[in-house]
Image 1 (cartoon, rainbow, N blue to C red):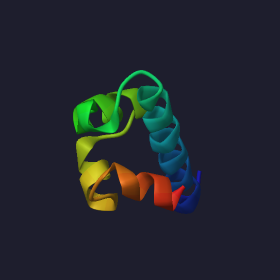
Image 2 (image 1 turned 90 degrees about the vertical axis):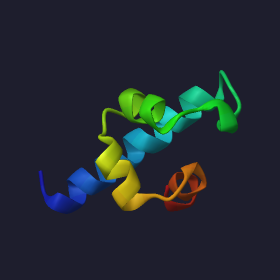
Image 3 (image 1 turned 180 degrees about the vertical axis):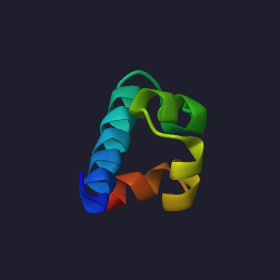
Image 4 (image 1 turned 60 degrees about the vertical axis):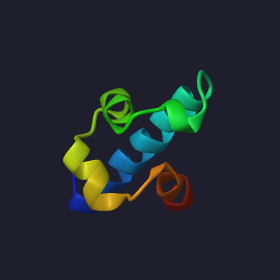
Length: 60
């Protein structure tokens, strides 16, 4: 898998995980750790690419 494909996959997984979590609770109640576990990405990945959950939505 190319670096771009990996980046795209992680973004898709992060977005999907956020949507799944939002179906069950409001955004302020979702932790970064919870999102990362659901998406299968590291917290380092999250903080290197996004400042908050809204940036995931905008990027997707």
